[in-house]
Every structure is written in C-alpha cells, then in structure tokens.
Length: 428
Image (cartoon, rainbow, N blue to C red; front, side, top):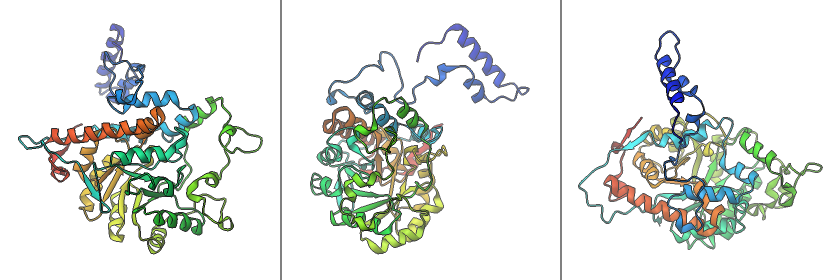
C-alpha cells in the first residue's frame, strides 16, 4: 500500500476524532471508510509489502512460493468471462470476502516442547488414507482453464495422494477421472435434477465407477446474481459461440440446457431428459429417497446452521459446511464461523467437511483443530490449472501439503488428533 501524504494523514486523524464524538454518533468504521480509497486498496491476502511486486508473474510452477503467485498467472491466461465466472461472488460479495477474512479471526494457541520431528498430517476416510486432510472441492468445467480439464486435476491430486470431488457439471466423467486416480476414486458432487430418473442415472453411474460418497448440494434453490461475472461477460469481446452453444440471434447468451454436453449425463436415456435443470423444491425427503437408492455415503453440502447439522446427524448424513464459495448467497456469513458453532454440536458423530476461503496450510490446521474432518480447497487449484495445467495443480498440492505439515509442527501437533478446539481462540 502506498504511503499516505501529510494531508491524508491529517484528514484521517480528524475523521477518527469525529468518530469518537458523541454528538455526531458516527461509527469509527464509517469514519475510516470516508477517508478515501487508500483503505480500499489494502490487499486482504496476500498483504502487499515492499519489495513484493504485484505485477511479477512466475514463469514456472516450481517458482511459485504460495498459491497466490499462481493466481496472477491464471488471470493472465484466462478469458475474461471465464475468469469472472470463477473468481467472483454473488451480489455485493460480502460472503465471498467473509470466507477469507474470518479465517484470520481465529488463532491457534501453540503448544511447545513437543516432539514433532516426524509429524504426520495424513487422514483416513472411506477406508482410504490420504497425505493430508485436504480435498479438491467440486468445481465444474475445468476445460475452461485447460484442455486437459479434470483429467489434469485428477492426475495431479492422485500424484500427491490428495482426495478429489468431481462436480456434476465436470467436463470429464467419473469414469474417466477415476481411471487416473490410482485406485482412490473421486467423491461425486450432486446437483439434484428436476427429473428424478435423470438424478438416478447420474448417481448410479458414479456408484458404478466406485465413488465412495455423494455430496448433495442444497444451497442452489434460488437464482443468484453474479454482478461481477455479468460485467466481465459484457467486457469480453469474444463470441461465446466459438466454444458454447448459444441462443439464436444472441451470440453472447449460452443456451440453458448445458447438461447435454456434460459427460456425466452421456448415458442418460433421451426419453427421460427434462429441459428443466433444477427441481421446484429440495427437502429432507429427497435425501431419504436418495438414501434408499444408493449405498454411497451421503454428505449434505451447504450446511451453515447448527439445527440443519443436527438433522444430518439424526439421519446419518455427513455434514458439509459450505456456502458455495460465496457464489450463491450474500449473507456475509463465513463457513469457518459456522464451523465454530456446528462442530461442538455434532460432537464427532458424523464427519464434517468444510470449504470456503481456505488458501494456506495454517488455514487447514485451524479448521481441523475446530473439528473439521476434511478441508476443501477450490479456487487455488483452478489457479494452478489455468496457470500451468497439470503441473500447476501439482504445485498447488505441493505447497499446501508442505504448509500443512509445517503448520502442524509450528503449533506442536504430531498428528491430526493432537489438534483440538482448546487450541483455538478468537484473535479479533
């Protein structure tokens, strides 16, 4: 951040004085917000400090020191509309920002004088042992950022022995990706379809392909407003028709039923296709229906409230704390703050997954200490994919694995079981 001028410093001091005045009744937050753009220019993460040059772009994946250095390359390589779709949030983006910012509001009380030389960050789930308690969160259409798509992310995550979840809207099917996963199949994220028969067909395929769990997304029940994405689409001068089916007479508007080209739907009989994508309602009754149909473990993705989490426990479903990365709603509620309430209520009776804003190994360690079983990382591995393809995803996994191990050693945890809620306190 640039140094403030003497005039700006004086203006800020004066407004801080006004903020303390009982006559004006102006909050300190409001006063500081009025000081101008210098505060808005502060980077949330990573912090900009000299001699760091934000315009510097790494030339090779191995040169990246953290995942944020891959973000800049990814943005440079990505079409404007594609970048806007992935990188922004809904409405005013309060939820999108809160996910990241609230992680810094929880701190760890480190334990000392412990033997952490051989610290082990591995986690076993579904009978499979992974190197870290991290999984690749489900994100659709990886070929937007690299032609190898989910095959590239599958290979890189398998190489690093990291779990992966595959989106219903992936550009490679569970059949294809599981072939490169070294015998450790992906979890399958499910968008319930308006036609139950279509839902059954894509779930049955995932189960046949060996997926151990189905992650049912339940937070997409209403239309969302992605203003930044819409603005980026307007500014993108390319024709969508070059890569996408578009509506007649409007080369900037994709057609609604994009599922027709998604490979997970390729075995769905034409006779049961429904042009309507999502159902009118999504209730607990659907989950019961799904439970009766599949033997895969069921996780409910989109849980943000204790009562909903306790209903999952009662019905035997895993809890997936998520707000879609801030893309579906703008409540300004973060996932890590919800985890702080949900984990003590769940009491370890079912596994808890979480995603939303996790960018560093210490973020992962905080979430595990608070009660998370597995921590999902989303945008960072897409940054790696868009920056350098499979090698970029590989680098993201290397960074996060190394950071997670180092974080455990720093806080005095030899195993994940040494991390516990007593180590967590509010920092701000």
